[in-house]
Image (cartoon, rainbow, N blue to C red; front, side, top):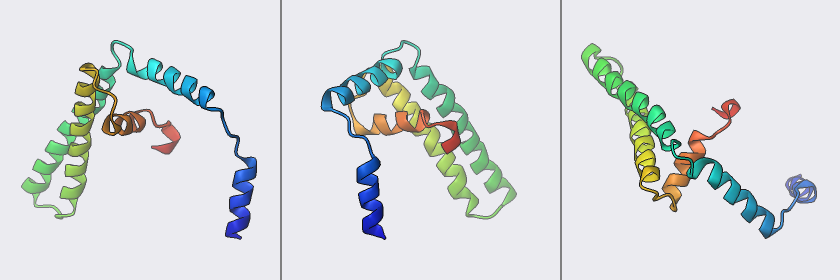
Length: 114
């Protein structure tokens, strides 16, 4: 069954030429990476997440809630910090690295996958 699904995927998946992939990636980079105000989107996402995470940690500690909730609050705050770092990197035009591309992909993820 596994072999059959692999063969089916190989048969039905369209392959693109290198030139097409290069043009596509350059177009996407221009759409997101070179617009003047696009780094503000990282800030608009990162700042609220950082604030909510910090407030969450404070409320969990103050109300002495379940310790596992700290993981959630720290995770939200960490996501905010990472988004702010990615926005700073884009503002300084240091976007040719894996970290930035992962943060950019998270930010551009279709709503149905959130």
